[in-house]
Length: 250
Ligand SMILES: Nc1ncnc2c1ncn2[C@@H]1O[C@H](COP(=O)(O)OP(=O)(O)OP(=O)(O)O)[C@@H](O)[C@H]1O
Image (cartoon, rainbow, N blue to C red; front, side, top):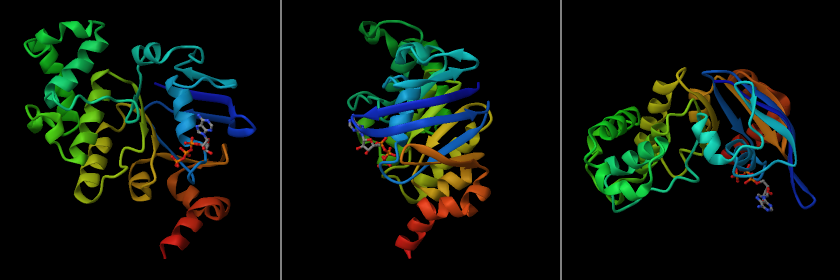
């Protein structure tokens, strides 16, 4: 599913946080958006998910203008956002948490929750999403007992349970390190091609391992878009962002 962003703009008071952003994310592509803190990455994702209305411009999903659509409508159309809005219920099992998301997709009400765990079809769909997130062996563990990395994979499973065709990932690796980060990257890699993904991530190793293309956002503007290697060696990008990071790391 193709996602197009056309001349999107958003200001908070005098601050232009999204400044005439246009991007086309191709079907099956992993498109990373990188940029310094405060560049406007989260605000951009919020406008794609429908959490925030742009001042101007359009968001187009598979040729259809969805700019005025609600978050719920967008989820229904196959656009899901993972991480910042997901609510994991800590007292419920991993499987129950994902089964709830499957049930929500099917339009049932939460008050039927008591029956959820018994419904084989729901559980099957939930287990499929868990397997994709690499968490099926933890299905019957209570969510609060998960490690931080596992928790993040549960959030991924919940997003997958909504049956997305475009997945918006807002810093999925924040606070995740080492082997858990590697496991998460491997999961996203396995999904590659099947889903279209927009990935905001500060972990450059993950970005360059996953992304087909990278866009660099600085002060609300896209200053470069291209293949990871081309973006990495772009002098303007290095000056604005990457060089700075490497220098501070040295
Ligand atoms: N609701 C709001 N009202 C006013 N200003 C806001 C609001 N939300 C974000 N901002 C400002 O907009 C700018 C962009 O914020 P945003 O969170 O989108 O950046 P970011 O690129 O995601 O940053 P980070 O990498 O630190 O998460 C920041 O200067 C922020 O303070």
